[in-house]
Image (cartoon, rainbow, N blue to C red; front, side):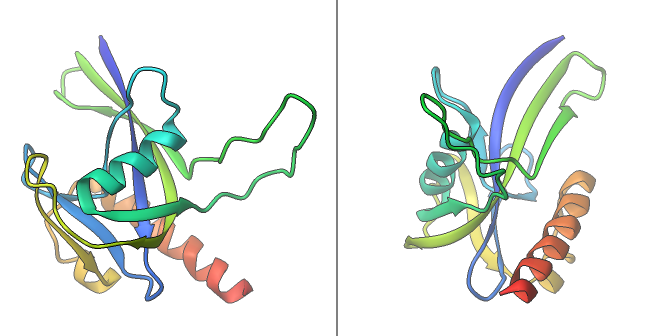
Length: 153
């Protein structure tokens, strides 16, 4: 089985709208993200990929454990790590590390070489878009998490 590793961002703005790209290859709406570069960690890749694909700068929302020791730093926790059977026959698996992110800057613009469109969507709008089942499920969980984060403020 061939495996490759990606990182994607479940990105929210201050209106709790969701940032999505229309994937050029699959033709559906997905969270922005992509393959890790050599020597790059998933949390670094998601920040780079979101910016490259959408023009939006993000910070990762991560509930850490507060570990801060000599020669040690805490790495942001992903929201989920999924193994996706891309070909549907077990021959090609994508391991996607998905992070919750908050938009902190930039200008929305689609990188046409990689995506066919980009946009901010309310959760109600998102539910009407063509996407994959795993995206529907994780976005529901992300919305619930973000609701709890916002209520705790």
